[in-house]
Length: 299
Ligand code: ATP
Ligand code: MG
Image 1 (cartoon, rainbow, N blue to C red):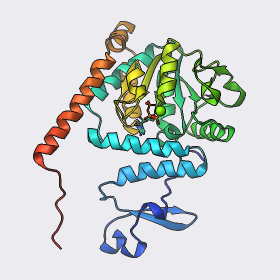
Image 2 (image 1 turned 60 degrees about the vertical axis):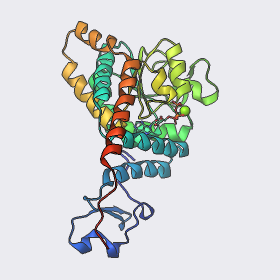
Image 3 (image 1 turned 180 degrees about the vertical axis):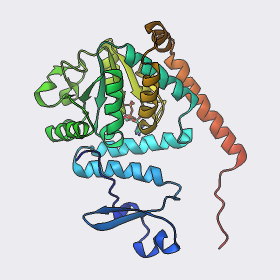
Image 4 (image 1 turned 90 degrees about the vertical axis):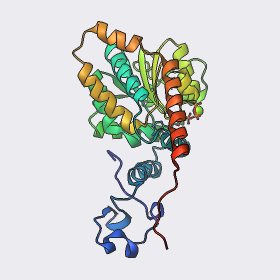
């Protein structure tokens, strides 16, 4: 297990080996599984990164720790990533800095990890947890013992010393939620003052807020209930947000508490989300004015 292998299935990349870019003398990335070359993605492919990220989720699904619904959620995220231009926006950067400050100030910070987060940024989750002194907890919408164990194993292989929320450890309950969705660790999310929830569901975000917790969400959809209910919403891809937060946390670590409080406490989520919407609006306006069709060679 460990960091999900970058194994690309033949279904995800339509160019058969005979027509692969190597034939055109181009350098290629080959990803081997079981000794057979399953796919070819040229470094020059414009959607290469996105395809590789997508494949990490598909692989996680095959291995049993990404839920089928997680694949759908990823597609929704990709859609919003297109709208922001697949890069960190100024308001997201501001939210990432405020979130790093809030995590450093916290007495009992916890980073909640689901299947998609484990597939997309396992090392980054562990690094951020270490930098800010947070606990890592497996927290699943579709909970099963198998998925819990697989995700905990991935985090351990990426350097986590302790992973909460597995088996009997998840014996406390979040009020107002039903069935397996309500189970959390009594030493983790239940007792936390600040919880980072990458790619969380709206009901659970609202329930955590009602318990009086500071909730930091990473969610590409600025209109989701999670985004609108969290204390600090980072509208950015988890693959960019976590490294940015870790960098800010390193920078802010030695700073006086007053300064951190000003950063975290001065953050206004409503204003930030409105800035994100304005950013998207302006970007679409600009694209609409300039034209967006691709230049293709004439046949
Ligand atoms: P909500 O329950 O908050 O109203 P939802 O039901 O539409 O939202 P969920 O499936 O509960 O969505 O949560 C997943 C969220 O994660 C979605 O808003 C989606 O846009 C977002 N998301 C998916 N992939 C990523 C990613 N790689 N980085 C950041 N956000 C992502
Ligand atoms: Mg939801």
